[in-house]
Image: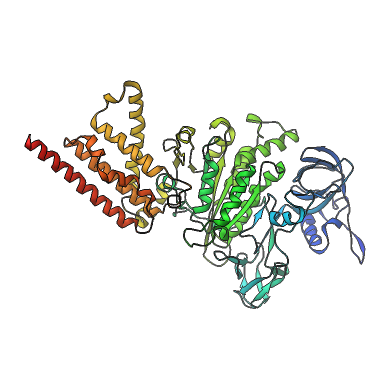
Length: 637
């Protein structure tokens, strides 16, 4: 058995120069201890660049490199990550533009994987794909990111007000709350015992202001003393631990009627929004990010056009949270990795966003992660795979595309968090998919559908008719409805399930009748069939269509959605009964209440329940009056 791992690890300090040999089984622990004591650039003997292919660099003299280890590439100090190790050669994907670097330049190892900093200062911030704060970078380098620029994700100078929640001598375990920091008006940042740490609180800071690097607690355990700070780091490709996953029985209310009523998503659930160009995927993601019933929103713009991300950055600071009235950015974190940014950073951005989401989940919050779009992320995988000369799979995507997608979506869920507290937290993931030519049979869409439980299919024909959101009610589905049925009937209305079932039947029957009309014409339809077509038209125009820019209609509470559906179904039942008794459909459609129904979507949510009851009463009155008038006319004749 080989006892020593070559080459030697050589590092320098101002006091001494020493050599360290370590056993293979002790390598990670030894690297971690050294990395915390000394600057990372002095840990290892540098390697050298052997070959460059776009964002992929092959370095030699790298024996002992670890998979997913972070490296500094070339004289410019570009950031990269090891993605393959063969002998003394390491293949590295570089997160910045590689133009200008050349073979022979040094490659410096860090001994650590790509990690994010987790602590106060994240909420309200805008990062790139590897958690570099873009506003700070702009101050340093202008409107364009300079290569090799290194900025800490969290402000080291800002002081945060820390309120302790533990006392000296208390026994704590991973996930317990050491104290709190009021990070924003909507988010109270809970400082947790880091994963893998447990023991007795030897000392804890008193209430006061501290930077993220100040020691706020000293925990004595089996491994000795561990100093806890306001921040800690976590590797982005490693899921954060939890006690267990629990089934979700609570919907994630989005404020979009077609989603909340017909195809709901549970807190901790997964959903996909596939659609071709121009069908409204990004607008749909913006709507969900603005109005979703989550404590924290994480929005990852992965490979999207720069003008779309610019719209997010402009709109979000001006928007108000519908529940609290506070600025929406007070509970939002943005990751912007646009299509003109380096391709490798795009591949890392979804993991960065997921790790931050898991961090807030561990505090007991409900988090909604918007990934726009996973197709651009898959294209980054394809490009890097091609440069690695791997065997391509379907349409050139790597053979491991399905497993990578599954690894990402499986990190969603509702969980019982670590610690002695019985809190639950969740991460709900909504991923946009951009199939070329609206072809849902392409690999990214098909592999995503095998994983997610909610499918909101965007229909190009609906978008061309200016029906937004262009979610197809015939091809979309949700597998969460059965588990959410009890919540809906108990918190919204007992008729919810029956109303949804009846609405779906009308929409499906409408499609069948339209095929008949196309074949033999509208004259072949009976009066009852015409009633079905009219009810379907009301459902589509007065309920399913929703304006993203209207100040009132942009967000619809779940109670308002329920009441709107009750009104439409009341009119449908009255219309069916009236036509069966001989009343002409044309006279029914001329009733004044029908115009009121078409305008009810712009009625404010406050007081809408009483407004809907009055509207149902007017429906009954006007149908009774119409029936009396027709009977009187018939009597005179």
